[in-house]
Image 1 (spheres, one colour):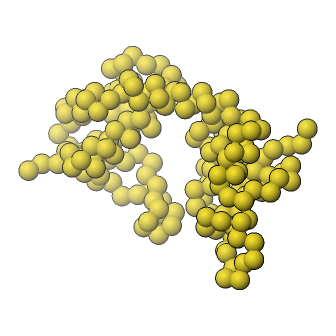
Image 2 (image 1 turned 90 degrees about the horizontal axis):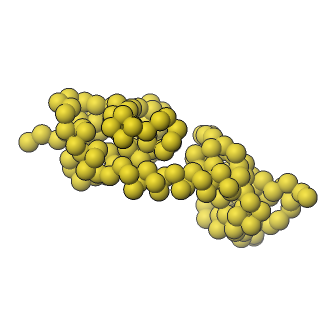
Image 3 (image 1 turned 90 degrees about the vertical axis):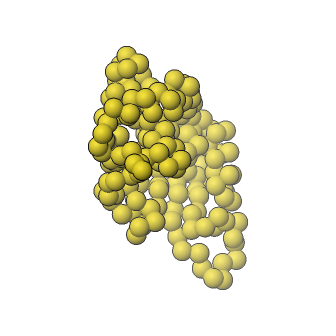
Length: 182
């Protein structure tokens, strides 16, 4: 059996490109080690799914976020396998069902100044008596806090730790929020 790992290459699209099917959707080119031609991201995900590989990292175990920045895949825990990806997705759905807006809103009400994502995640874990690693608490709490921020209840007060693509794509390690007053 041939290996099925799809690599994502970032390339500039030439103005006179004849074969846009290979470069469709931007600056990414998808190639599988088995030799299968992949026209776009949808074809790459379908091929990855059919061969038991993660559809997020395409079996490479690494997510290419922007050119020059990648990280271990968060969907399959860096394994590149589809089964692990499905387990992680189920865990995220369970976290979404257990950790709601009201729970987080109630826990952050006690903070009078800025608070960190990690503080809130630890509070949620302690409140629900969850052992570390049981559910993806941090990512779920981050999503809830970002939702509260979008609704105008919180304001992000920390600066990004990394500028990945100017100020348009940034990364925070442990962001700080505070309640909107007034």
